[in-house]
Amino acid sequence: MRNIKKTASFFIICFSLFSIFINSAFADSSIETQHFRVLRFEGKVDESKLREAGQKLESAYADVTTLLGITSYKSGKIEARVWGGKLVRPHMSAYTVVNFHIDYVDIPIIRHELAHILLHKCLPNVPRWFDEGVAQYAERSLIMALDRLPSYPKDFALRKLDNAFTKADIHKGEVSSEEERAYLYSYGAVSYLIEKYGKEKLGTVLQGRGDFNGRFEKAYGKNIENFEKELKNIY
Ligand SMILES: [Zn+2]
Image (cartoon, rainbow, N blue to C red; front, side):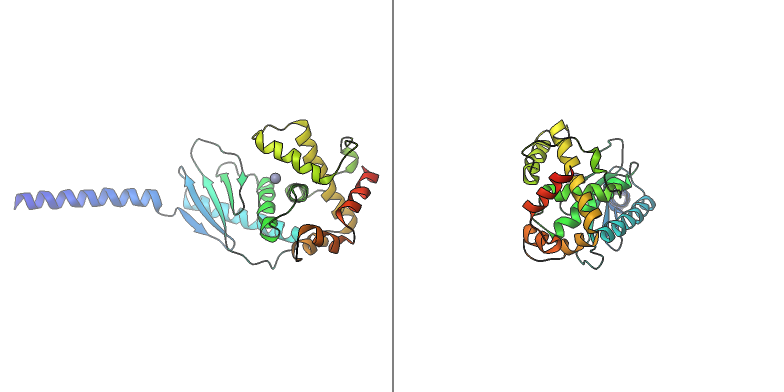
């Protein structure tokens, strides 16, 4: 009898400890908003903080979809991985996921990363200059003054910028002057498109059909080569 009691107590204690563990490890580890699944990924993050982060993400989402002219765009939820704890990670995005630390939520950078995610949903093969240019515009909500651009190389071509960005990926965060210039030219090119032809054209490109070059030509009435010539005249 005594042994049965002991065994029962042992199981009750084990079950309680297990419940506490399960509660702390998984309870409230994710919340959902209209467009996001906000997931506690590592470290301690209270549910109230996840909800706060969800609100910030929704407001950034509204800004970016308005800019991109894709307010009616329907798709699955974007995953937001929220980190807690001491280790501070940089804001990052992959094609469907945005990562950030709960204590360092940088809204302009979130807008930048969301712009990448939404662009890739609409245009899987978007060239890097357009991708980074639009993301930087979404980040700053400002048109870049083109006279602030450094002098461009004689053989400047938008498609060559993609190589500079590729090098940036290899260097893992260390930005060389060539890469920095690639970001600036991309930002400059997209700012010029927005200033000269209006924001609505971004929506025309993103909601169009076919590949990027075809969509671009249809929206702006010129192909990429002619757009480059136009850029050279103002750089
Ligand atoms: Zn970017």
